[in-house]
Image 1 (cartoon, rainbow, N blue to C red):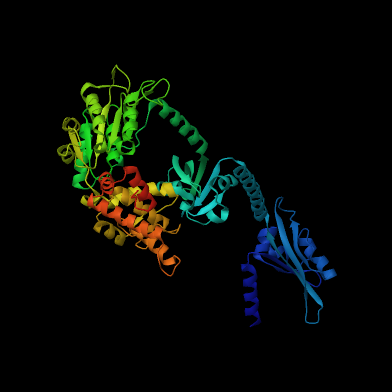
Image 2 (image 1 turned 90 degrees about the vertical axis):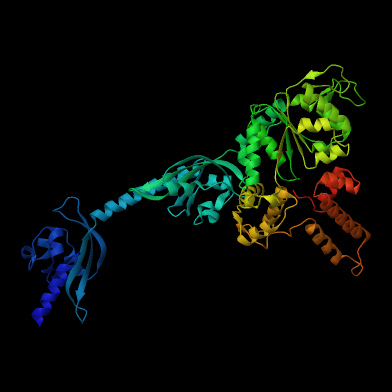
Length: 581
């Protein structure tokens, strides 16, 4: 039994990775395991039974026997190996009476550990240096892991974006984006760099340019690093330059046919027709209800024509009184009338020379001005007010109306000869209720614009809202849809991304205004008795609503029915929340 236990103990001692040397009370070696042989470089047979100081260099087991004091975590250099350093624990062995009967030393080669420690120290120094470099650079730096979660940002990032480490670290890569797609996610998806991505970031929607690169270690994608540069100052200078250029060149068109959402057959037909006539010099008449996008078509036609680098000038004929509209269109000479500017003034036809003049709401133009417009279209020349000599011009005319010009011709309110001049190429833009197929893409298109305006990241509308939208007739057309989506976004919490039914305001003309008035009435003094002002406001709202419905939401006709000016109607619609956009 004793022999079996001795063999087991010997097996255990020789299996351990640590070197073990034990001596008896006389200092003679009793235990010298295989690890000790490898480390010290001597065979057990050469050491066993001999005094430890004779067999092991630099040992201190003899001192531990004399003093009875343990020595813990002491380094020891071996004479037989130049660069080997060991760490050892030496303790006395006592019997049950506390008498020292021997001593044991357990030691381990720490040469590799010391090298690793030195490497770690060097890595820490490099890390500190890199951290100092990253923190001192003026460009904002953002780093995410392979899952797109924030790992690191520098002080320049906080200054530029306006978000702290708590806002970013451990959060998705999209947390700082107000407008645009995440460069980090694109880099992680493609494993390729992304250069010069434009976006707006942070609560203030700061415009930036971002360069992103993958972080690859040992062939494995570990994350993405992005360099973010503020371009707001450059944009301000660019905008100032554009403003100066627009003052020199006239007005710049903003839209192209790419901005027109056309999925429905009627809208596709309208776009195709507009594309075909864009390359020709003919006069175009855009017909459609208010809010259908007639001005967008005018911009697109100009941008697709050979005149796209020339001025694009827009005039709303309903927004200007007769006398002012005439002087704005054709200009005047010095002294033409009281208050005329010294030296006279060029008209908008002259400003649009070589380009396009867009006359919106042409149906309200006074008959006398219609005669002058007819002369321009026939003779290609204008006559300034007070001038006796015509001036030749080269202007393409695009007009738009939401009224039935044929009926106005029959009533003597619109010149028949001008009608035929304008109606060379009529393009009918269908109302939104006739193009329900366009609703999903229109919502997506408008939400992108509204996200930029409001600094939000709304991605779409849910199915129930889309069903409500599809069932609604949209009397205000696309402009009303934009208004509804904008008000829905305002009703949403900042973290919400999908428009649901609880966000959407009541649909229909006057719904918002009546709700406001109802709230006022319920809180008015006098035990529920309305004030005279509230009663008058309700009557005006109801009168405007009926006039708009009777005029098929043509504001010019509605103003005539109400006996007020078009400007007066716009004012009251804004006042009562009836304006659709």
